[in-house]
Image (cartoon, rainbow, N blue to C red; front, side, top):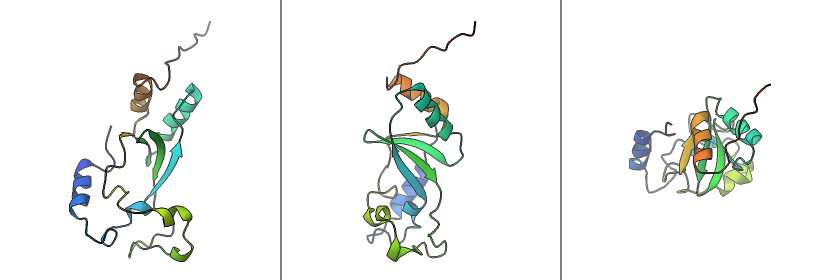
Length: 139
Protein backbone atom coordinates (compact mmCIF):
# COMPACT_ATOMS: atom_id res chain seq x y z
CA UNK A 1 0.00 0.00 0.00
CA UNK A 2 1.49 3.33 -0.99
CA UNK A 3 1.16 6.48 1.06
CA UNK A 4 -0.53 9.49 -0.50
CA UNK A 5 1.28 11.83 -0.40
CA UNK A 6 4.55 9.96 -0.13
CA UNK A 7 6.41 10.10 3.17
CA UNK A 8 9.17 12.11 1.46
CA UNK A 9 6.71 14.66 0.08
CA UNK A 10 4.99 14.91 3.45
CA UNK A 11 8.32 15.79 5.15
CA UNK A 12 9.20 18.31 2.45
CA UNK A 13 5.82 20.02 2.88
CA UNK A 14 6.28 20.23 6.63
CA UNK A 15 9.72 21.81 6.21
CA UNK A 16 8.31 24.48 3.87
CA UNK A 17 5.53 25.66 6.16
CA UNK A 18 5.55 29.39 6.73
CA UNK A 19 4.11 31.16 9.73
CA UNK A 20 1.40 32.60 7.49
CA UNK A 21 -0.08 29.11 7.03
CA UNK A 22 -1.55 29.20 3.51
CA UNK A 23 0.65 31.89 1.99
CA UNK A 24 3.16 29.58 0.28
CA UNK A 25 0.85 26.59 -0.27
CA UNK A 26 -0.18 25.47 -3.73
CA UNK A 27 -3.80 24.96 -2.59
CA UNK A 28 -3.56 21.37 -1.44
CA UNK A 29 -7.05 21.62 0.04
CA UNK A 30 -8.40 22.47 -3.42
CA UNK A 31 -6.86 19.35 -4.93
CA UNK A 32 -8.88 16.70 -3.10
CA UNK A 33 -12.52 15.79 -2.95
CA UNK A 34 -13.09 14.05 0.39
CA UNK A 35 -16.42 12.53 1.36
CA UNK A 36 -17.27 10.79 4.59
CA UNK A 37 -18.50 7.23 4.01
CA UNK A 38 -19.71 4.39 6.19
CA UNK A 39 -17.56 1.34 6.85
CA UNK A 40 -18.86 -1.65 4.91
CA UNK A 41 -21.41 -3.86 6.65
CA UNK A 42 -22.34 -6.14 3.78
CA UNK A 43 -20.48 -7.82 0.96
CA UNK A 44 -22.21 -5.52 -1.51
CA UNK A 45 -20.96 -2.42 0.35
CA UNK A 46 -17.44 -3.84 0.49
CA UNK A 47 -17.57 -4.60 -3.22
CA UNK A 48 -18.58 -0.99 -3.91
CA UNK A 49 -15.62 0.35 -1.91
CA UNK A 50 -13.30 -2.08 -3.68
CA UNK A 51 -14.64 -0.81 -6.99
CA UNK A 52 -13.79 2.79 -5.97
CA UNK A 53 -10.18 1.67 -5.71
CA UNK A 54 -10.14 0.53 -9.34
CA UNK A 55 -9.83 4.19 -10.32
CA UNK A 56 -6.46 5.86 -10.58
CA UNK A 57 -7.04 8.87 -8.29
CA UNK A 58 -9.46 7.26 -5.86
CA UNK A 59 -8.55 6.21 -2.30
CA UNK A 60 -10.25 5.10 0.89
CA UNK A 61 -8.86 6.28 4.21
CA UNK A 62 -9.70 6.13 7.88
CA UNK A 63 -8.98 9.00 10.23
CA UNK A 64 -9.96 8.95 13.89
CA UNK A 65 -12.31 5.99 13.25
CA UNK A 66 -14.16 7.81 10.48
CA UNK A 67 -14.05 6.44 6.93
CA UNK A 68 -13.59 8.65 3.87
CA UNK A 69 -13.46 8.38 0.10
CA UNK A 70 -10.78 10.61 -1.43
CA UNK A 71 -10.62 11.60 -5.08
CA UNK A 72 -7.53 13.49 -6.20
CA UNK A 73 -8.86 16.14 -8.55
CA UNK A 74 -8.45 19.90 -8.61
CA UNK A 75 -11.39 22.18 -7.99
CA UNK A 76 -12.58 23.79 -11.21
CA UNK A 77 -12.27 27.24 -9.56
CA UNK A 78 -8.59 26.87 -8.65
CA UNK A 79 -6.43 29.29 -10.62
CA UNK A 80 -3.41 27.19 -11.62
CA UNK A 81 -1.10 30.22 -11.83
CA UNK A 82 -1.90 31.95 -8.54
CA UNK A 83 -3.38 28.98 -6.61
CA UNK A 84 -6.20 31.27 -5.54
CA UNK A 85 -9.93 30.68 -5.84
CA UNK A 86 -11.60 32.22 -8.88
CA UNK A 87 -14.94 31.93 -7.09
CA UNK A 88 -13.83 33.20 -3.68
CA UNK A 89 -16.80 35.46 -2.92
CA UNK A 90 -19.23 32.66 -3.75
CA UNK A 91 -17.22 29.71 -2.51
CA UNK A 92 -18.96 26.74 -0.97
CA UNK A 93 -19.56 26.50 2.79
CA UNK A 94 -17.15 23.51 2.94
CA UNK A 95 -14.35 25.72 1.62
CA UNK A 96 -15.29 28.56 3.92
CA UNK A 97 -15.10 26.30 6.99
CA UNK A 98 -11.75 24.74 6.09
CA UNK A 99 -9.10 26.05 8.48
CA UNK A 100 -5.41 25.22 8.61
CA UNK A 101 -3.53 23.57 10.13
CA UNK A 102 -6.18 20.81 9.84
CA UNK A 103 -4.90 19.85 6.43
CA UNK A 104 -2.48 17.39 4.87
CA UNK A 105 0.21 20.04 4.78
CA UNK A 106 0.48 20.27 8.55
CA UNK A 107 -0.51 16.90 9.88
CA UNK A 108 -0.97 13.29 8.92
CA UNK A 109 -4.52 13.28 7.66
CA UNK A 110 -5.15 9.54 7.83
CA UNK A 111 -4.57 6.63 10.17
CA UNK A 112 -5.02 3.99 7.46
CA UNK A 113 -5.02 4.59 3.71
CA UNK A 114 -6.00 2.17 0.95
CA UNK A 115 -5.07 2.43 -2.70
CA UNK A 116 -5.58 -1.25 -3.37
CA UNK A 117 -8.80 -3.26 -3.18
CA UNK A 118 -7.10 -6.34 -1.73
CA UNK A 119 -5.56 -4.43 1.14
CA UNK A 120 -8.94 -2.92 1.94
CA UNK A 121 -10.59 -6.33 1.91
CA UNK A 122 -7.88 -7.85 4.14
CA UNK A 123 -8.16 -4.96 6.58
CA UNK A 124 -11.93 -5.28 6.82
CA UNK A 125 -11.69 -8.97 7.69
CA UNK A 126 -8.62 -8.74 9.93
CA UNK A 127 -10.14 -5.92 12.00
CA UNK A 128 -13.46 -7.80 12.11
CA UNK A 129 -15.36 -4.93 10.56
CA UNK A 130 -17.15 -7.65 8.60
CA UNK A 131 -17.22 -11.41 8.79
CA UNK A 132 -15.82 -13.26 5.83
CA UNK A 133 -18.65 -14.80 3.87
CA UNK A 134 -18.45 -18.17 2.23
CA UNK A 135 -18.98 -18.19 -1.50
CA UNK A 136 -21.88 -20.31 -2.66
CA UNK A 137 -20.86 -23.21 -4.84
CA UNK A 138 -22.60 -23.72 -8.15
CA UNK A 139 -24.11 -27.22 -8.22
